[in-house]
Length: 178
Image (cartoon, rainbow, N blue to C red):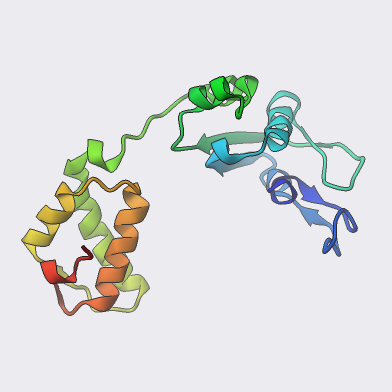
């Protein structure tokens, strides 16, 4: 992940046969989104903290310091305060990232959004897969709205894509996975 975020110089590691700009360098004067920031190693967390505090990166295999002006937006589904207490997430990084926290409730906390998401994804996924737009039985919408969706929107989207590919013109209860 560090080679992707910070880039590398030729010869920095096996397979580094050229120089590569990392995402932070590419995002200079812009914004970068770090998804699942809780999964970063402590070493990578320290480097991200350096970006936030000093506006600096160092490519793997380089001694040169590069200045970057980057706004970081991050996301995670994990409780960072618990991870800090357990020693797997840096407290100083938590407070640097937690300037404007936005909690997005899980789908099980906002079931009223599920029908809207279903109709949106049916349209988009039919277009993406070159399918004629399909209809969806009301019982399917009701059943999908009552499911807890532990994988949230990603799970909903993946289930819909599978169902759309495998079903006829009308999506019925029999088309849903158990």
